[in-house]
Image (cartoon, rainbow, N blue to C red; front, side, top):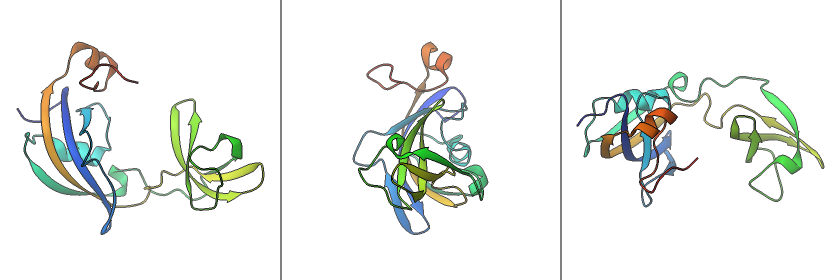
Amino acid sequence: MKVAKDLVVQFHYTLFDGDQEVESSRGGEPMAYLHGHGNIIPGLEEAMLDREAGDHFRVTVPPEKAYGEYQEGLTQRVPVKHLQGAAKWQPGMVAVVNTERGQRQVRIAKVGRFMATVDLNHPFAGRELTFEVDVVKIREADAEELAHGHAHSDGGHEH
């Protein structure tokens, strides 16, 4: 079975920013996504098309097919108490904030006692990213996954 729209794909990846390894799923459970539903960055989803379980590949994704170009001036002031991820904040650190659309990563630009200025660009915006991927498993999506537009874990439904 080859990767195609409406199939659930499980894969391991290692993400590189230049030559530096940034994150990896290896050593844990593989990532799972529903192909063709925008659940992973476009450049990686395009590279997955027609792959088969057991395939190993490396792909470099330009910013416009990853997290977009970096946008100057995309900042917002938020209360420090809304920042999640550390007890004490310094410029350059990445925090998580809750929004109407769920959690979002932001980079601390400036921090005061009660308010912080955060950069709303994704931490990887404007960067060319390289993924090393191992396709582990491909399966048919069930009706609930198709209705929800994303893969569910083998153990059941999680949001």
